[in-house]
Image (tube, rainbow, N blue to C red):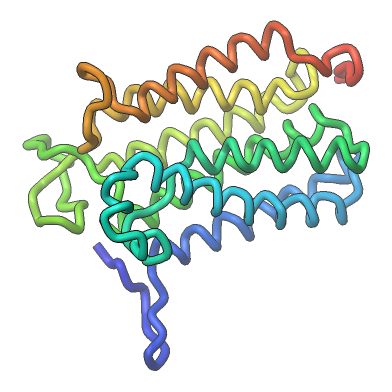
Length: 249
């Protein structure tokens, strides 16, 4: 693990923060470059990306705090400290809500914009999980498998490298979404599909992550993931903008 990539004087550059920044910049640049192909102004994508970035950070932090609320209520200053992390579920929801407001406010095609962003959300997630591996967060359960790694900042025990599982899976999702760009049945399908794929992946990987259970054998992340799968299935069937933005090939 390499939680600190390098230091400049008293400033430390952390691997997780660097991977998050890289994921955001790379995803934004690639989306901006692709925007003309789908008929969206590049300036709109830049503005939207900045709003999504801010909303996702705030939403993911709030969600993470809610998931461990008692811990943060004990010492409220922990909320604004570096303790803990971010929840992708919260970031995705916040980013989607802000995006929905923006595209409706400026009359940008909802489905087209969602499909433009979907592959780069998967790519960004894959890159960020590499940062998780280097930092030692989001680690797996102790394991004796040949590929187990000391991938946790809490100890040096060999564990499931769930960060690698997550990264590889989302790189595959990225490739799949790019492949389906011109084969989707309606605009918005790629985004809805990724929501479902993420839900399935996250539900499965939670069995290997070192997470607290929420109800019975199910973690809170698994419960939210099942909800994401359900929402994805319903949106594929009832996506409200199908008739407004018909797929043209």
